[in-house]
Picture 1 (cartoon, rainbow, N blue to C red):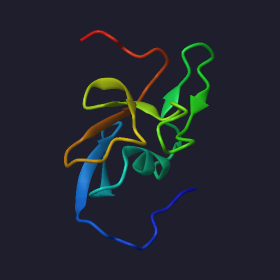
Picture 2 (picture 1 turned 90 degrees about the horizontal axis):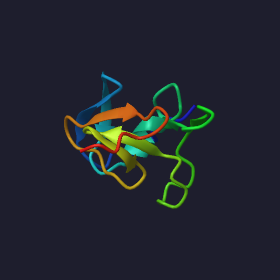
Picture 3 (picture 1 turned 180 degrees about the vertical axis):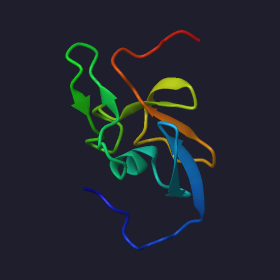
Length: 98
C-alpha cells in the first residue's frame, strides 16, 4: 500500500515490528514504518476491536498509538526510529501498569 520514495537521506537501521526485523531510515517516524508493513494498522480500539492506522501524522488524532520499547500508547507519528527499537501493534486497552 505504502512505499518509501527513493530519497534516502539518512543511514539505514533495523527496528523490530511485532518481532520481525524491518529496515528503516534514521530520522523517519515509527508511524511511517508501520504504514509500510502489512497489515497497515497501529492499534485496535478498546471497545469494538476495530483496526486504526496513522491518520494525521502530526500528533492530533491518536490513531497511531502503539507499544514502543515496552511503553504503551506511544504516538508513533511523533516518535523517531532508533536502532533496535521494538514496536508492537497495540491491542485493545493499553497497559498502564509501570
